[in-house]
Each structure stands twice: as structure tokens, then as C-alpha cells.
Length: 190
Length: 293
Image (tube, chains in turn blue, green):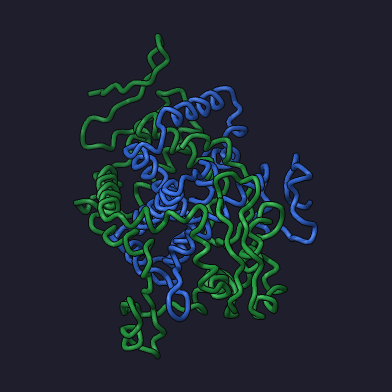
């Protein structure tokens, strides 16, 4: 399959008639069918919160719009809105006795940040640059971690262990294997 | 929240076209930030890391740049005083996640009167009303991606309306029936409840996100909150829970106060108080903070 990267399990390849969009032609293993299903459900639910069904045409939630306009710091607004939305989705799953795998939540969260940035653009709240979206993603992650640690659904010890792995990989020169894509930024920063 | 770094490079088929996407390198940096944050409180203290914790200069530079860039918020100082998001979270989640979300942004021609007559609607007063058409063009018209393959077999009824085959299925959708929505087999806890077949006629809509919702009838949309989302209403319905979440985020935002952009130096102190330096205890290998001067 074009652009789907090496090592792809043939059983996981999409149907031949399905054309992979450019944004899907990334390196890395494809999500398992179960993970993909959960991801899709999370994104559908996120979209439902952002653009709830009401009378007439679907509209953007006023609460979301208000949150995106909440302060004079647009990056913080985006970060907070996305982080809170992701926590809402996570909690709603938990309340139903279900767990969203962390890597699914991670990727869905990143896409939700981008989605909300577009909402803000359409609603003429703020036009976010790619850098702004990244900044909001980092802030949102950090806020999610703190909120989750307080509430007990984020395990800081497990995160510390993963950071230890990053540090070891960095010291041994294998960072790209643990953090794919990081080398590109390190070259740019050099 | 463990198991993040193993999934950084994982590829998910997108079902909503996200133009402003977070690229792979940013995912990697994000993973380092969130894991490092647990170890170091990395975001507020990132600029004071230096090479003291054994990270290479290259990685330290990348993380410092990312962290301080995020703190700067695109060049906006957080020294305006007070908590930047205090009050902004009021209403979030409480309104968004529970039923009665009919906050309608009416087209200008229809005016506030029509908005006021719809149950639960509130005229928002935005200069440019958001409608299905301009929303759709902003995020990319046409059917959203994905929706096929083994991963979506169990939600094919929804998937076809969201996927690249949406155009092909439009006629069958408009005819008034959709495939039954059944849980994905083998997913485990996800989608444990089978949804009955949907037989109501759906309205044809445009492409993009709202177009996809337009094609779903209310019964299908209600089905969206089954499985993972079925706790959406119940979880968010608790007023105390919503208030606690809002207050938590307002408190967290205070952690990012007090950074002076002009004095920012990735390897220098930027805090008002003496900045801690992270060191490793050679005896135990544990990280500890050493407040210098």
C-alpha cells in the first residue's frame, strides 16, 4: 500500500478501494482495529460536543466558543478548551466503565486541538498558526497531566518511568526510536 | 496516562479532516513534555533544566524551546496579572455535554427572533454567524476520511456517512434507512450495547464535519453516545463535578503565571524566586532539585 510505511501487517491493511489520504501516509504502525474503533468513537463524541445537534442546522456549541474566547491568551484558551474536552470524553467513558487507551487519547487529543483551532478560525475568534496549535497542544497536555494527577486518573510514576526511557534513549543515541520525529526538530534547532 | 511513547508513531485513520494538525515531531515533543512533567514539573521549570539531568543539549534545546514557546503563548505575556483563564471555564462542559444544547447561531437574515423562539437557543451576537456552509468550507468540504476497513466494521452504519464512501451511500441514506449500528467485535468494553436499526430518513447535508452530522438523523446521533460516550450526560450532569473541574483548571492556569518574556533564556532563571536546578543523586540515580542562589 502506498505511503503506509514498512512493516505493516497485511491483515491490518485497509480495503484496496480505500485511498489513503496524504495525512495518513505517515510512518509508523497502523492502529489496531480495536484502537481505531475507539479513536473513531472518541472523535465522533468530541465532534458531538463541539457541534451538537439542535434544531435546524448543526451549530457550534456556545460553551465551546465561549471557552475559546475565555481570555486574551488564545493559546491558553485553546489549550484549556481542548484539555477539558478530552477529560470530559475520558470521564464519560470511565463513567460507563470503559477505558480509552492512553495512546488513543493522546492522538485524539492532538486532533481535537487542531479541530478546535479550526472552530476558532471559522468563528473568527482567532486564527491559529501551526506553531500556536503546537504550543496549545503542549500546554494542554501539561494541564491534562496535572488535572489527572490530582484526580488520580494519571499515574505520575508511570510517566516518570517513560521519561527515564527517553533519557536513556537520548544518552545512547537512540532517541528517534523512542520519540519518532524528534530528530527533525533537533536538526532544525541546531 | 502511561503508555504514551509507545504510541507516538501509531497511525490512525482520520474520520474528521483536521487541517491544523499536530505533526509527528510535535507529538514526540509532547510526549517528552508530559512524561518529563511528571518527573520534573517540566513545563514551569523547563527553562531551568540545562544539561543537569543528563539530557543532550539538542533534546534540551528542543524541549526548552517548545515549553517556553507554549508558555509565551504566541508572544503574549502572562504578566498581565491574575489567572489567565479564571472565569473562562464557566459554562464549559456543563452546557456542552448535557442535553439541551440547542445553542443556535442563526444566519444573519433570520435574526435573533428566530433564535429566541427555538427552545434553549440563545442569540450569540457573533458578527459572522456560523452555519453549515461556512463551517464546512473552513475545515474542508467533502466527506471526512476513513470509515472503512476492519476497524470500522462494527460501526459501518455511522462509518459510511463519515467515510470516503459517503457520496456513494448518499442515495441509500436519503432513501430512509441506514445499516444497523453494532458494536465492534473484539473491542472489549467499547460499544457493549448494540444499537437498534435506524430507519428514519436522514437529511442530505454537505461535506465536512457538519455535513456528516447533517446526514445523521437524531436517532443515529443519539447512538453516538452509546459505548464510550454513554456516560457523557451522566458524568457531566453532576454540577459539583463540573464546578470542581472548572476550578481545577483555573487553579492549574495559575501555574503558568509570572513568566517574563524579555528575560527569557532557555538556560537561565526566569522565575521570580531562585530557580531550581535538577540534579541526579549519584548514589540513587534519583532526580532532585537543588535551589541555587
